[in-house]
Length: 75
Image 1 (cartoon, rainbow, N blue to C red):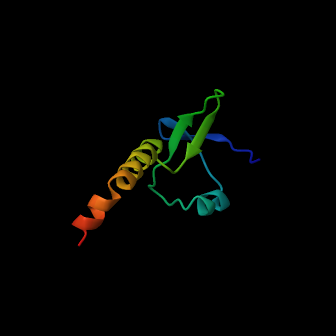
Image 2 (image 1 turned 90 degrees about the vertical axis):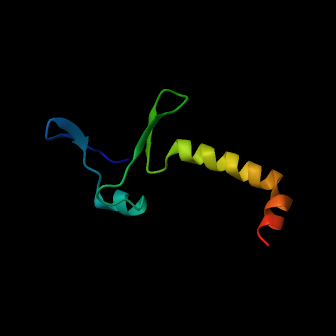
């Protein structure tokens, strides 16, 4: 577990992530992160857009359903 401090950044507050965390999450200056509420009431910060993940699951389902049609169109 990491101990992070909230710091003033301009007129806002922010958290500085250690270099090791940024490297592990493949984050760079200007990248977006997403804060989502988990079912147990806690929060999760992730670099992955949960809405995009949902859309990809639906796309994969559609591609599986229409795989023969997509294969014919790819010719």
